[in-house]
Length: 276
Image (cartoon, rainbow, N blue to C red; front, side, top):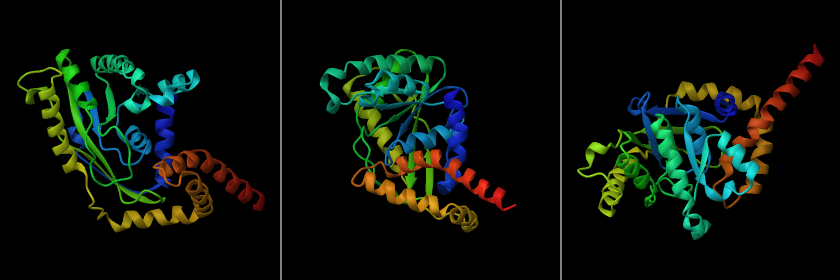
């Protein structure tokens, strides 16, 4: 219930955050089958938020494991369709917990659900693909080995800039990687290398810098911008001061807009009502 409400509400707020977005390849996503979104990760948890809002069916997102330390946070994140994935930098002793997460992913796939994993294993505000980790390959190969028919959709969100509102975005979904492309199924070193090479080629094709969008859609954004300029300006100053040197500017900015915009609208409504 919470996930579905936020999907609709945040999707509405995004109209005040994004100037224009172009989506290609959405027809490559199965309408009712199991899916792994193997994604390029340039913009912190904003990447996951956008995919949650722009893809029709619910998506379980794999997020950094250290966010799940507190029990109440773990419960909240689970309600938001998130599961922990641990890197060696978060403690070698935690790596075994990934087996539990992968087992939960397998159950999601058996129920024809969808999982998002960021295949580079880390986030940087970059426009080029970083080296791929083994997690996506292991998740896909393990699922195929268990007889689960899951499609891997290489996915890339491309941003024209990372530290301002009114951005333009290109979301590309490439054709899926399927088990039929492998002669033998299993989590072997050779299969991991082969899988990652296929995924790398498709992700590199999905990473785009062609932001030549229609002018009229951009013009429609400016009245919204002018109306909300006081909020945008104050939040920009605050968020820049708190996120300098990190990749979290856009994510924190959007999170604050989700809270502040309704209060701003209430203030405008109150002022207009008092003047009538």
